[in-house]
Structures are given as C-alpha cells and as structure tokens.
Amino acid sequence: MNETYLNKIINEDVLKVLSMLADNSIDLVLTDPPYFLDKMDDSWDEKKVASTKYHHVIKSLPAGMKFDREQGKNFYKWYYKVANEIIRVLKPGGFFFSFSSPRLYHRMVSAIDDAGFLIRDCFIWLYTQNQPKAMSLNHFIEKLDEDKETKEDIKKQLNGWKTPQIKSCFEPIVMAQKEPDGTFLENFRKYNVGLLNTHVKIGQDMFPSNVISTNKINEIVDKCFLISKPDKKEKGDFNAHRTVKPLSLCEYIINLTTYSNEAVVLDPFAGSGTTLVAAKKLGRKFIGIDINKEYIEISKRRIKSTNANYFISNDINKERQLRILEKAAKYKRLNKCKIAKTI
Image 1 (cartoon, rainbow, N blue to C red):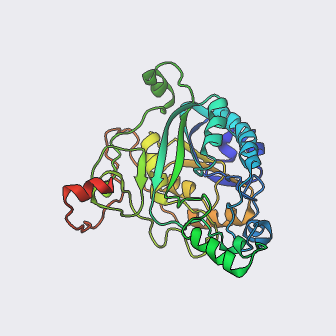
Image 2: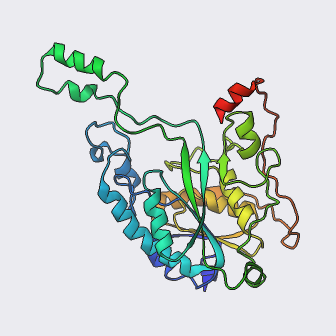
Image 3: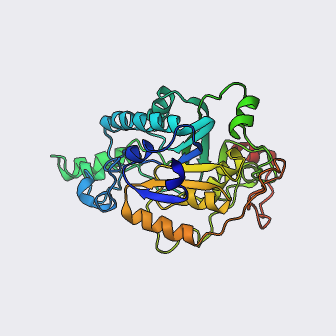
C-alpha cells in the first residue's frame, strides 16, 4: 500500500495522506511540526508568517512572540489527531521523535501520550546562538499620559527589566514509542525495530545521549554531546525555509533507531527535507509530506543532490561514529572552580 509513496514527497494535507498509509508499516517518524505560534499553524503560509501585519504591539515583532493561551489548546487538539494516525502506521515498537518549542512542548507531549504512545524520553538540542526575545518597556512608557520627567524616572526604575521571554538555548524533542508486541526481543525479531543502537557515538566516542549540541560550547560539553556542525552547503542557497534543522542531528536519530536498509522513515512535516535527506544518505527509505509547494521543491532539489551511503544491514555491531570533531578543538585550560561554573 505504501509503495506509491516510497522515496517521494507528497504535497497534501498531513491527515489525508496519513490515512492512506498502511497499518504497522513505518519504522521511524522524525518530524518538526508547526508550533502554532502566531500564524505558524497547520495551514502554515510562508508569505503570511513573514508579513508584519500578523505581528502585534510592535510591527517588527518576530513571528512566535505573541502570547495566546488558545495556541496551546489548538495545537493539542490538532496534534492529537496527527498522533492517532502516526501510532496506527508505525510498526509495534517504532519510535516517534517530534521537535517542539519549550513553550508548547507540554501540549505536544500530552497529545502524543493521550494517543497511546509510551513517552520514553526528552531529547534536548542544545545551542548558544539565539536571538533574545525579551523587550524593553520604553516603547510603552512613552505612550503613558505622564510628563517627560516621570517617564524618564520610570525608565530608570525599570532599566534592564524586560518582558518575560528569556533567551532560549535549547529545543526539546520528544522520544515516544509505540507499544511493543511482546518482549523487546520478540518485537525486534518480528519487526526489526524497538531497540537503540548504542554503537552510535557522539562527542568524543561517548555513549549516545539525550543531549545533542551542533556547535562547540566548551571542552566538557563538546566531549559528551557534540555532533558535527552543519556544513555551509548543507542548507543550500535556494533554501528559504525558516527553521532548517541540522542534518547531523537527524542522522543521529535515524542511526540510533533504525536497523535495516528496508526501514522506512516518515516525516509528515517535511519542510525543506532535512529528515528525508538524512534518510537517503543513510540508505533508508523515506516518505515525506508537506502542504507547502515551495518547500516541496526545495526538498526535491536537496534530495536529488544527496548521495546514499548504505550500511550493511546485517552488521549490527558496526560502529556508526558521526562526522564529529573533525579537527581537535583547542580549549583554554580551566581550573576546577571554573569548570564547576560551566556545568
């Protein structure tokens, strides 16, 4: 039933396509869904999201800054429907990894949990480069019906005090699993899924972790959590997608959870195709879905230029060390007190 969609990207509503996929046919779902912040919902429109007319208070306010309690409720209702379809198409023991924002992560996990998944863990993509979103209140103070001197006094009083939006330096990724059929061993022998390949290493030959970093932070963090930094050519000059995920991060999760070259990786919100590119590169089959035609074309171009590096499926003990720390990083020597402050 899925043969029509294998190694293709379908431009259609996600719920419609998921309903056409066969039961128990997908090994891994790895996706970055719309977060329902402002207009970034299930009918995502790049042009509308980029338009300032949807941003409130200040015209240049970035998308996602408006706080609305209904966002989380709407996200839950919609993602519960999606999760119900995903649990149907996943093989028993199959994994479901889904990115989210820290603000609405609880809504996403609740939807996945309520659909019947086992919540195994929360992965953290750790980074240091991000735009602080907290705003000064000076703009509002200027609009007060007060004299100039009073306004200046208020500004001094609130100097450094800003709106409650801390600089976000991580992205949570839920790790959910469909209930295995019997024991883990019985399930794996039947479906080739449900276990983790701990021969996959991150950092400096370290055991796989639920914390991942794609940019160098310091010697201790890099040793334990670093995977390869995205290549400059990885995204592509033609890629207009706003939230492209690192290819190495998707490779890590696919390597960790899929065993056979016959494994099918599904991304129901393919975006610019990073999950699909990673799947092809690792010799896995894939199915992509996205409602945005522009993103579909970007994905096709990226996939077309990707070469597959097939692993031998029957060599379960083969180490799959990612392209990490190609050049030894030089760090300043830290004393114990300084090290303690960094962790």
